[in-house]
Image (tube, rainbow, N blue to C red; front, side):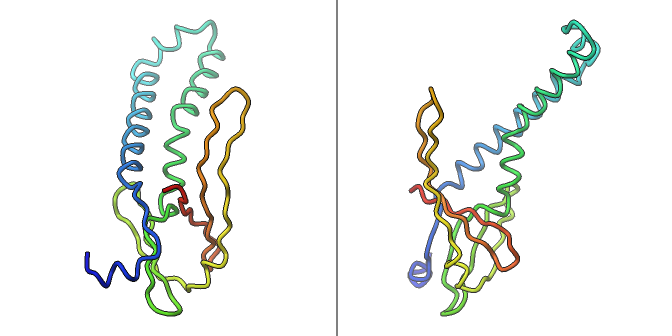
Length: 151
């Protein structure tokens, strides 16, 4: 990286390898769930007391087995990997892509004023407390970008 490039960098996420790892796990889980259910539907359905029960459990397994994949797909194009200063009035924002085709777009620097910080603290009973602070930046077209504040 050029020295000049470092001076223009405002933010950089170091979670890209983690995002890819989670993506691979979620895709593998999705494929596994589909395979287990639909490779031999008749045999799978025999495990349940009724056809309704088989369909209900199938729907549950498909939803539960694909929830994380849906989240990862939602983050595609929204999770900020890097923010660089372009000039006095503009910034470049590079967003993460699940397929590795990251996009860098030029935005007015004023969008950083729209940043809304969230503490990201979960306080559910009988569960560990999670602290995952993040900010949301709105683009001029209204798209929400996620800025990971945990470092």
